Length: 501
Image 1 (tube, rainbow, N blue to C red):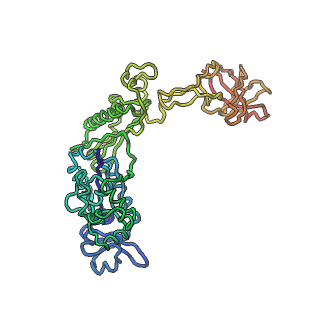
Image 2: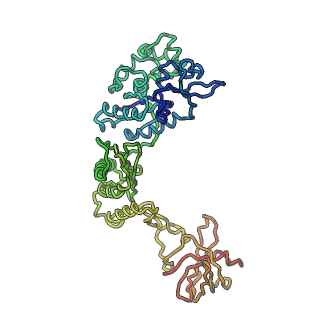
Image 3: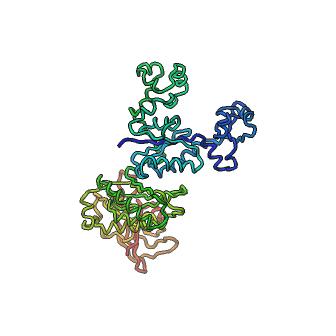
């Protein structure tokens, strides 16, 4: 697929924003200024000020001589950078790849996107008119290369869309300034009387390199498509993502469900073709007012089953607030895993943990209950101490090489961390006569033990434990242990670790 780029040039981005915030300045000559060497210097200006002869880097005092009624405001630090980032994020509704080209441009990789709007013409018109409706003076252009789109947006005078493969022809008649060259290089080019790019390309590359350096050759190759130019999107691009623009804004739950169904079918088809299943999915609705509503799900195992995944997301549609309506929907799978064709083909017939009913139920519970880790699965771990002998599974399909303990004297409920108790016990190896736990005294009637459990020597060198099963005078049973040899400080040595059923 041929790469296509849309470049947006915001000619007066800072002053456009000021006018948007202060509409009373719309018909006034406006400049932004900053102190430099003891004078206020113009750093940004609107179209009205420019038409009256005011220039960038002109002293404000000189600008006042040209336009006595000029409005001057202090420059705001990094205003253009923050505006460009917000505009780039807004453009994500039209393409997943939007990059900032400081100080006043955006680069959109629109490859494979324009057909969703009926072609590049309607697509271009929609984006540019939407930006102008926001109050920005913007020029745009589409081409196969970033360099050609940049040049046509800033210097082109014929048509904003350069047909695929025609960027060389379209650029030859433009000024060398359209090649994004450094000012000293441009100055030397003009001194030689080279006023069009066509004059430059007639010169041998070795002569261009010798006179102007490698930079001019790089810019020519990038503009003509002979060298690839990479950009970094403001939002990382999801490999598996589907997008659906709307001819009219969608406000009803039924309309959102239809969009979700179409996106889910397209996304799962791509996943199946690549032998993948998703573990997380994010469904976004881009509102007319610029805000984004989103819902997300997670699955206990990788899946590309349309019906199951659609049901999980559909249960959350009610939380999406459409307001004036959604103009675009997207569905992305940021986390995917390999999945076998057999797993999906026998979706309803797999045995045990592979049986669809269990993971489907787990997924629905997890995505409805807001509490984190509402459903957990545990696997055995190769450790002796009880609190380390199990671990939480990453997924419902995960297996462990360690065997489950076959100990029959373990209590039904084991604390995650042993808790200190006060004990009265004969020494050295007798069980407690009574202990105090959380302020309550427990009198021991029966006891069994000790059973010695030692930690692995290579971990932390912790002392061994002597475990006792105790029964109090009311028939309740407890699992306690003494840590290491008796030292005469039983309060710091004894712990309760579990409760028998």
